[in-house]
Length: 319
Image 1: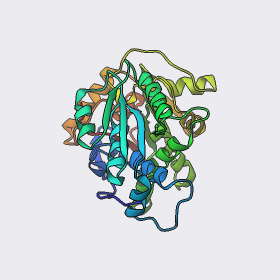
Image 2: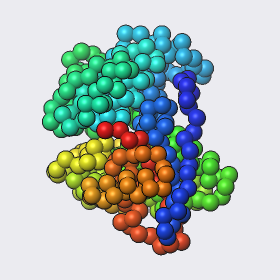
Image 3: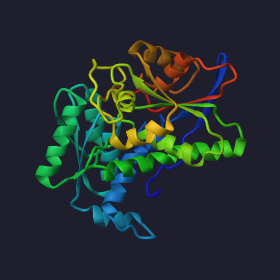
């Protein structure tokens, strides 16, 4: 569905970081929102407005008619909330975004600028999720989370379906040039983007890479879920990788990544910050420790010089 402006593919860049030539999927300009999450939230808002039966031909007016009076609620560390709020604005619905105390005030202003109601809800991301659940249940709103758990999978499945566009853009590029990556580094918070891209790689890429899932060492929720064989809560300090600092994995992401991923690797706050600096030196778009986590993991894994790694710079320089 491409019913909004700026739906063009994001660029795939190439830079030399000795000893590797690194492929860099630059998501910092995605749909004017500065992060890959625009793909999921906007798409999911549209699909949930349309309902279970999606017509063969969909128009913007059709979605707007069905969106009238609907309110979408979610918790966010920033970017998912922006995507949901923007989707609500595009289609004429309402948005209520719950933020933990750790989310920078700059996100509040950005969310309000696209018409969202912002509610500060607790000390942690997990607190804000619970607040969003209660808000939706109490007011008959639509809860649109990007994480999933038993009994709650369809809205986050739609979010992940939107993220698959990223993998398809990469597949089309590599199919044309024939130079497929050997290693793909996918940073993960609850795991939606990593799982969506990994699923599409395993499903339809003609050359299969090693898939490395990258998490903060303060929040290795997917690694620990795979070790335990089930989703578990992890404990840890607050990380500077704010969009990845999630202590409980998405159930859907866990179920995909336990089979699709080759390695789960953690990086420290210092390693992620050093990766931000290293990318900046190469005249790449500014990013954050969350956005640079894949590059930090590449340096930590240190594959052979013959490797052709792919990283995703997942967001612009937001604070």
